[in-house]
Structures are given as C-alpha cells and as structure tokens.
Length: 259
Image (cartoon, rainbow, N blue to C red; front, side):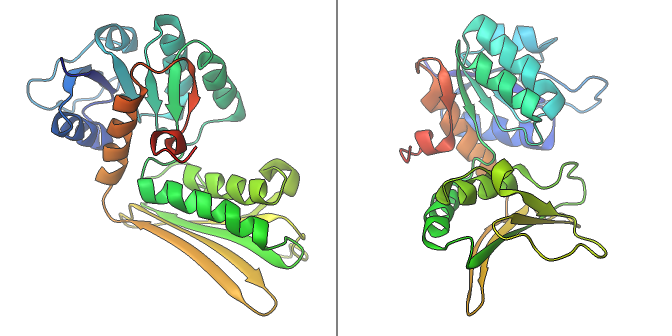
C-alpha cells in the first residue's frame, strides 16, 4: 500500500507541484483542501475535502505550504490526530513556532525554512564558517531576493541562515542582534550583529547569499533556486520519511541524515 498524502491548498502553485511530486514518488493523493473563496481547480481526480480536519482524517501524512496564519491550527490537528505534518510555510511568529513545538510533543512534525537539499547543506556550511570566522573580525550579512508576490521579509531561509551563523558563534540570533532595513543616519554597524537585506522583484524563485566581510577579505556563500519544484520534491521526501516516526520536531537535516 502506498502512503496517503494530503495537501493543504492543493490548487495553489505549490500545491499542484506537491501533488505532482507525490504521485511521482509513488504515493497516493488522499485529497486536498482549497483556500476559502478560491475559484482555482485542483488537479484532476483529486478529492477536494471540506476542511483541514477532514484532510487529516483522510491522510497518513499532511503537507502544508499555505500561509502562516494556518500553521498553528494545522499543528493542533496533527497533535489531536497523531498524524504526521510537513510544514513548509514561512513567516511564522514566535507564538506560532511555539505552538508547532508544543504540537510536536504528540505528533511527528517536520518544520523547515527550506526543503531544498542544497539549502540545508548551505545552512550546515554556514554554521561551520561562522565558527571559524570571529564576529569581531568578520561581519555577517545576508542578502535574499524573491518574487514580487512574497509577503514576508526577510525570508524564512534568510532567518535560518542568521540562526546558523549565530549557532556557529555560540549565541542566538536574538542575542547577536539583527540589523535590517537600514535607511538614513543609522550610525556605525554593531559588532557581532547579523545584517539582513531583502530584495523583491519579478519572478525570482529564491536567491540567498551569506557574506562574511573582514578588513582584508570577503567570503560569500550563495544558493540559487531556479525552480520551486525542488521544494516540493524535498517536502514529499520528508513526508515519506516522517510516516512511522515517533512524535517530535524534525527538520530537513534529520530527513537528509545530517542531524
């Protein structure tokens, strides 16, 4: 029997890609939900379920790439049903993330800022680079660019990069301090702070550059996504991996065997 995968927002751009990749991986589409008021049609032959509760009931694992406002509710349904959840939505607030972590005590949840394998390798490298390049000598700056429709900034991946840099330096992003949206007379850059710049335009899928700037050298680490299908492929891989796992909060590092 193939794994029954449910997809929240199945008629959306990512939802359709997730459906295609699930079928390509040999899974069965248990069904999907539509955004309230949406006139978009789901992929042919896929059951449209009335709400998220029905989606969790019909599925062995659910994938959610919809909107940050739905993350806590979907995590709560995972906890209530014990169903695994793959959560790829960005822009979660600290309250949302706390709700997801709490739900993971009762259900296996894979939550990642980015499901592309290459990005997760970059995150691991970023942490090691930060450990080798002291904050007193190398300023860390993160520049990201996405399509003009993206509603949150900095991107979830950019924040994950910032957290990786902070971990490598033995601190947290909150303690190190974030500098972003510089404009006007901002004063000198704070030593140890991690800088962010967000660019929006056109239909860029995703570009992230981590720059370590020292007095005598600059080192840049860049990842570019050319097709958002890479996120769908990674998310389906995570979904298949998650089935049968004990409750807990997992990431793509665990799925890829890098944890």
